Image (tube, rainbow, N blue to C red; front, side, top):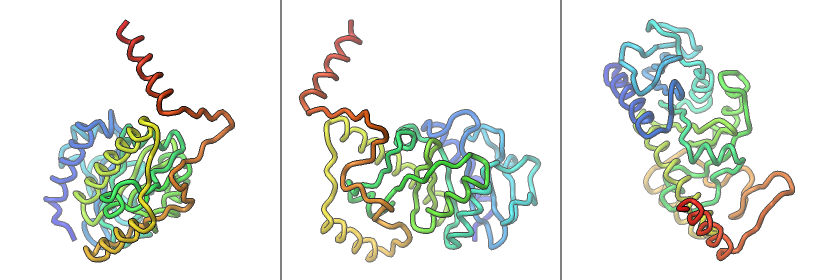
Length: 256
């Protein structure tokens, strides 16, 4: 399915991109690609992905048994293998901790309102998967329940996961996800978000079909209709002017 030499070079390059963009720090994150019907190329455990060399990469079978490489495969490999089992047409997985997307995951807010045409077409909905302990079958099982219908996930209190037809596709979806999260955050800071109408979403779905884009669902498990769930009872509501006033006061305090 993939030229092994090219796949290794791309994986090293993507690891460097993730690190340079601060989507990961230290030894965080993991990447994998299906190189044929029974083998997976994956990043190793315990190494900075920004400093990887092709010799550091590991090849396993679809059960996770190491076949080639002198390092241990990523401890998150079970999550990747679950993706390949649930979505056989998927050939690459990227897991990272991009700061703004991860901020939404920590806040318990899915990126599900349809706000941007490009995101609806390329990513579909980005639901928030419930928490699972990292590097365990618990997390792999959580991902398995969602990845059947979605190409990008927020992992509660953990990070984000994207999948694709190849390494670049999976990586670019991670870029798109973080860019969308940043725009979403700016809109919320300005006072509100304005979701696309159901009619306009349907037009975008038709565009996806015309372009041959398959896989991601547009609707999330629990549509939030432009608002997101808030846990607990301590909810604060501000008008636009009140919000601007607080921001200006904070700026003045910082300058002083």
